[in-house]
Length: 209
Image (cartoon, rainbow, N blue to C red; front, side, top):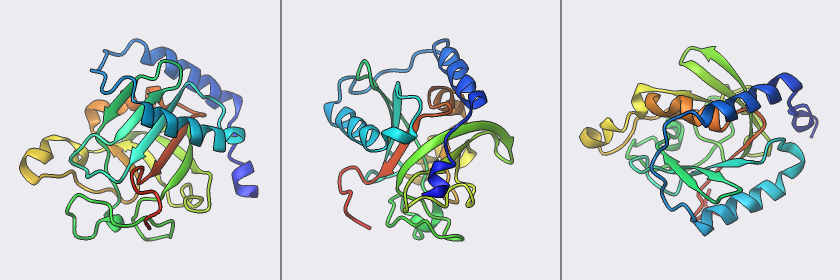
């Protein structure tokens, strides 16, 4: 619990989140997919209510549905006011898909697993890392509370380019991070700036390992 309580963000991160929200309004509009998707909105509301005391900004929620293959747009940014949903490609960790067939087989929170972790994350500050522009995450649950020490973050990657789907039938794999196509990265982290929630799981079959 001490680690979770220490995850609350400061004024600087909140300000960055507000600036990012304003900047996102200037981005070109993407086509809306299922703008009134009641299932995703319901999941976002339930998870936001469950983690309410740890989430500072509640205008949008990010949902990663790892019951879907990497060849599909399975990261959803849900607008909690309008119900609009935006969809993006996102990778999973190589340790979650050792056969590299594009399907996540299992989650892990263990060091060295290179796997994706399930659960609720708090989005944190932006930084310039080995993958360029990135955004830190804090895991808020026992299934992902090693996220910071494992350096599980949001970043862009060439291996997340959807052009790979045409040749390989799937995206590449990360070391557990949420890696997005470079063309979408700025849009994603602008909309999901500091203080918001990302929830990752198999949304269709959440009880599987």
